[in-house]
Image 1 (cartoon, helix red, strand yellow):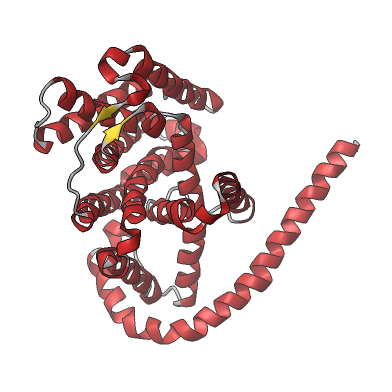
Image 2: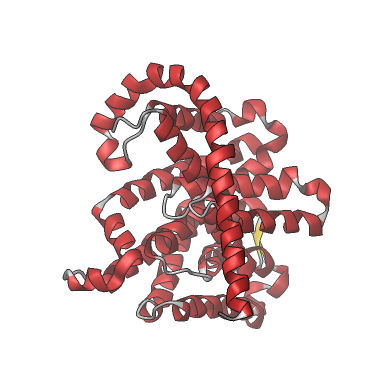
Length: 373
């Protein structure tokens, strides 16, 4: 065995040892504490959870009492945020927009395993469609016109990317999506007489009332979350996961994986369009640096990784955690240290909690609740 192989195996054993310590000691002790506190809540909420499981469980997934409690606390926190978090409405609003992006990325890349670096081009298509319409057609154009057209343009671009690229596998698909972002970025500069180049296009904000603006973003985010969760739990979601696990087996079963991958890209493009329009109106404009650069795609991936890929609600939670750390809790560290800390967190999650923090929490609550499903 060469020195390099011995070093690699040594690192692997060290990582495995750290994982074992985290799982068997820290997490077990934490689970014990939460279990002592959570059992009464589980017994109290189980009848409600059981009724939910009988009616909606097949469509959105079954839950335990503690998982229901987590959902209620999260939903209540979102709905009442203007009452307790006026100083944080701006980052919460941005967190909701990025949650739409992260969930949109997840239904395509998280479910099928085809990792896309091109989703910032999709959000950029929506933002630029809105910007170009108000700049060159009518500055007072109604949202009832700009929003559907922007989502339609995003879907068309998504199909234009998906049709040739989804026949490729592995790194080739990712490279095609990566190059697409670079092309889109250069296009915004090459067509600067239309797009104003790096200056971008000014777009009116929804409203200067931060509370109203927050709800105008959170409501679509919740609708996207419910819709994608339903799709992820349906037969379509099952096929998408099967493609990720063994695409050849899906083909052997008589199912056309390319058709389902195409559907996943369309399903992904629609929320990207919604998020792009929301971000354009929240930021009061659209420009290449804010919308199109590949860094945005990587941040979407990071949010999904932190929350838990192929779970929809995991990326939602990951987006709020990522934006909260980026825009609130780590701001005091300065620009460089803040990003260093964020990417270090992503690295630690990838190494020690590959299923994501929120999925880990969800499973722990299910196990503590007895998981009577």
